[in-house]
Figure 1 (spheres, rainbow, N blue to C red):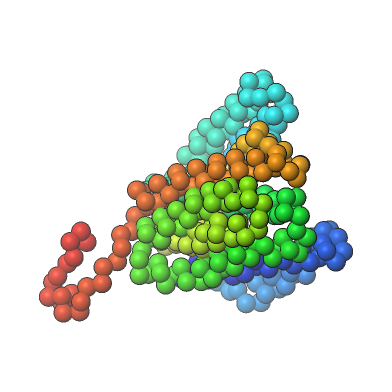
Figure 2 (tube, rainbow, N blue to C red; figure 1 turned 180 degrees about the vertical axis):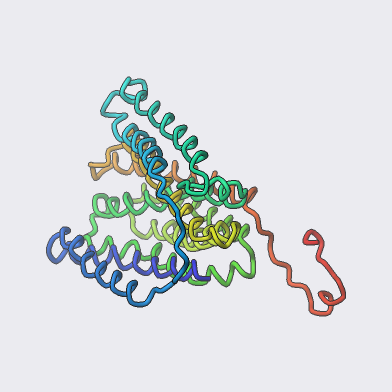
Length: 345
């Protein structure tokens, strides 16, 4: 429930953000958007310092600097390869090959460093040995590209192809962001009733279907055609992220729950960044992100279908590997008579 409330609040902010940003752009300059972050951040810092108090014993933990460095080097090399592959002449260019090699070396070094770091590792082995937690991280890794890509490219589609104003574009994202916010609030009670497998799988399925519907609608060059895809995507985000986060965090020892939440978030950001880099590469190969005509449409269609394909992998992980069956309500008299439903004994 707590995770759903937090993500629901984040959804409200995400829904308001594009609308406020579009209004500031129409009224003055897009640079005002960054200035708006200052009072918001100041309020958040003061509210946290004033109201959040969770005293606990200090642990003699060390920061895993080598883990941070190795994983950062690997991911930056991969993202740079995605970014430059077209400008440098394709995947066979020696510079691209060198970057991909650096990625492999960086990730291999990260695995070695993490094993040596023990409990102080950035991603501790005792946490990742829990299969359900690992599967949750894998699902997040493949699915996170969808949200990142849609938030980057769909507003551009509305501005360049549909020729909406900035504030109209911000309002145009409300079907997705509003549904995301509302569904996140109710995901907690649904989790208690249905368990993680059904909810996470349903959310991942929506996150595969949403971008595919949007790719079909792009050719129509009509905002109304985008609404079903936006709504399905918002439903998927609202169901998937609170559920998979709760499933992952509750699968490890309670003393490691905060670390588990941070690791899931790290996989979300890493998956989103790498997925967005791959999406941008596919977009640029199929079309032209800087144009506003058919080339942009061709690019966004290819990009959204790639993201739908990545989400299908995440859906399969949730359906086949993430634990948590449906809860079966047992009548009171049967519970006290020693009755156990089949498959749960």
